[in-house]
Amino acid sequence: MDQPEHIKKWFAPAPWTTTDCEIDLRPGGMFRTVMRSPEGQEAPGVGCYLEIIENEKLVFTDALAPGYRPSVNPFFTAVILLEPHGEGTKYTAIAIHKDQAGRKRHEEMGFHQGWSKCLDQLVAVAKKM
Amino acid sequence: MDQPEHIKKWFAPAPWTTTDCEIDLRPGGMFRTVMRSPEGQEAPGVGCYLEIIENEKLVFTDALAPGYRPSVNPFFTAVILLEPHGEGTKYTAIAIHKDQAGRKRHEEMGFHQGWSKCLDQLVAVAKKM
Image (cartoon, rainbow over all chains, first blue to last red; front, side, top):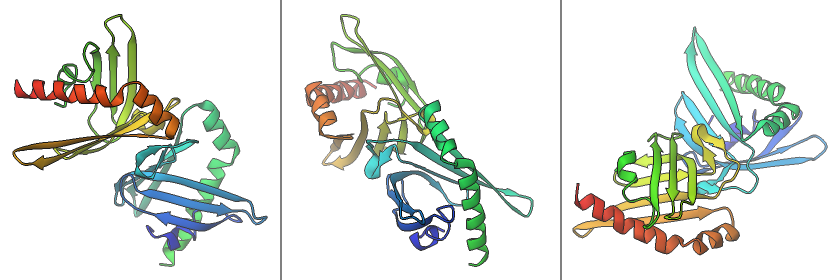
């Protein structure tokens, strides 16, 4: 799931799609995506990875551009945690914002529903691999 | 050199002093300092560590607060590199800003002279340890 062609299959909540993706999976390495609505609205995102522990933890942020350069429009840091749970895996996604306004904005963008939908898409893709 | 009592001995260019320091030396862990001028002007700084490779590389930033939370007033990321050089060590300090204005501001604050002076102080402290 660490290749752009995989990310493109699940990273944007349908009917949005992920039209572009670049991954340099190391601390400070680029994580760049472009999401696109059916109407053609594009939402580009660029940031870098902070922590990568295989099958346990992934942290990335848009507060730092690749190479750790402070970014012009920081929005959030994402922490993804995976842990064994029964016969499956517990998946936890945490979004960390600089203030309440950022958190509220993300909620109003549909964070909870969107990320849940993406997780369903991720599971569907994984089952086919 | 990874303890607050060590940092306090060299981190601020004299006649400034480092009056407070907190270190949680792990990715995402707090790095907090307070520098103070002879006139009592205080310059607090808080951020987090990003990469720690003993005797090789240290990266910290104020663009992220501890726990990777995007910060309100990001200024720069510091990359410190150490490598063997003859019988000694080559020390490289890189400051990465979000734009030219930030870089200029840091230069005008006396970045080059200040960090060089701190390095001299660090060497003097290390020789006594």
